[in-house]
Length: 94
Image (cartoon, rainbow, N blue to C red):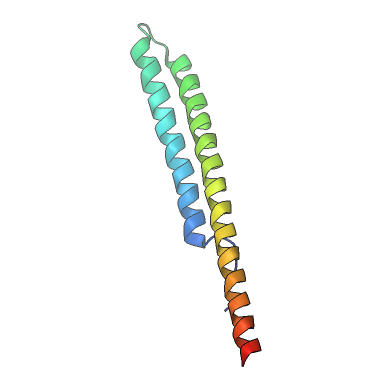
């Protein structure tokens, strides 16, 4: 099996779970804060603010997750490249 520079499946699954969890938490916080600030039945406004908060949080975490996965991929590619170079040096010296 050859080494690849792409992030592992586990890392990608954890990134998706983090995005979903952040959206859920952001939506809940946005909804609850709006309900607390509103004195008369504002369920529509609270739902809208909750939805916007969920999307905003999910987008923010998605950006961070993509950057982290790219950095991981570059790190893996660098490790593979260095390993290949050291193997080439060993073969040349023998």
